Length: 138
Image 1 (cartoon, rainbow, N blue to C red):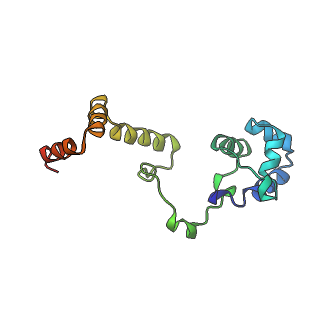
Image 2 (cartoon, helix red, strand yellow):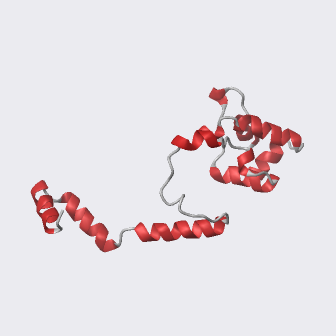
């Protein structure tokens, strides 16, 4: 929850600045008021966090940039793990980036034949695996 450490305070500020009630935010995100109340809870044990869809709904419907709700401190990103396929796009257009991600997934996804070979290899004995590796030059 690294990016959501101060989300509860930021959400409350957004809600109060926009004169929105808990019910207003709940309707925007398709959840009940109790859920929104738990997002704003100051007590960590009582706090919950929105899902991605709820977070995006909130941003779109309040016209709030995502980085205004999340802890996006650049200095803390040095050790952040990047997911393969998400850092390859240079586009700021989400549609283009998603299309590129889809193409990357298609590129690395195993065919049915490759999956069957891998399944059989995994079931093979250690000796048979060594022979296959030798045949493949490995």
